[in-house]
Length: 145
Image 1 (cartoon, rainbow, N blue to C red):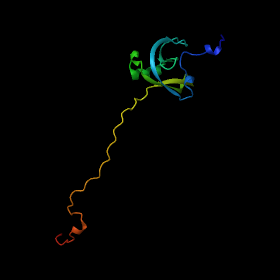
Image 2 (cartoon, helix red, strand yellow):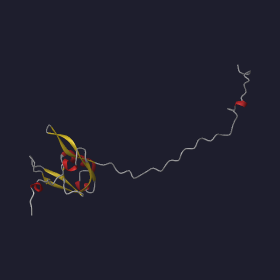
Image 3 (cartoon, one colour):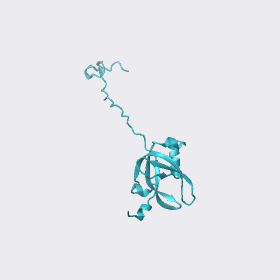
Image 4 (cartoon, rainbow, N blue to C red):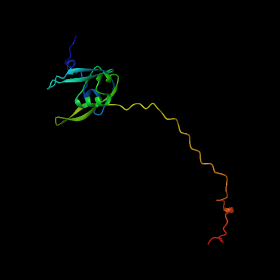
């Protein structure tokens, strides 16, 4: 069996490069939410989203956590089976612009289509009263003072 160094360079977590170019996005369904220790500089405990269509998770920073909490509530078990859009964007990280992943909530599908409205019919003329008929106009102004 041949070993490749690149096999050991793969992250368990999604990165902006995994989506493609800047502005790329993917709709993903949340399968699980776990608590994991970020082995970064501060060794913080962070929430990680896992999805139905990819093996990589999304470690939630404060920005993404707040977006999801605002949309789905504080109880993370209620987030399961929800759809999110993960997209790449340039963000300021410690004074340097860098690609990052952000989440947004897709709008609900508009399955309702209003029935077509009937075309309004033109108003029906009332019985002719002769008022606008030029032949019945009396031009005699003798009684007008």
